[in-house]
Image (cartoon, rainbow, N blue to C red):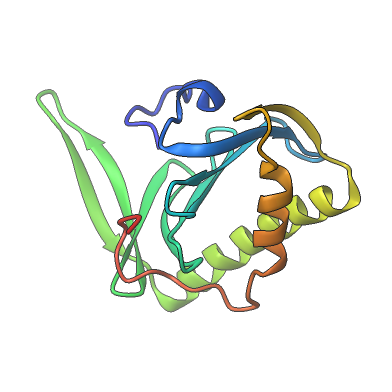
Length: 161
């Protein structure tokens, strides 16, 4: 995720931590969706600049960016971090989500992931670019999404490993 709230960088070119990545146009999404896998196999999905979902190798949500807030996993719970600016610094104000807030967040995320999976499965997505060129990133993402459990899990920590 970008450190600045301004437009995100060209993820297909610059997201080098994602060793396999693709940019897709999906019906219903105003911006391209960038998807990619880290070397360890963990998945990141960027629906334009917001929302962003990042998972660990077990398929658990570890970090997210949505609605202008950063989210991170802590001991299987979601914590929201809001930037507060002063003249001299930017502070992150931490707040643990309630069970209801977590359920709503995960439901909205699941709906978006299912729409992406449906677009990939039905051939309604358009591949805009891919790295490396011979990778089959959309197929791999589709397979990952097909294996998505009904109840989405939150990681114990926000780290990729």
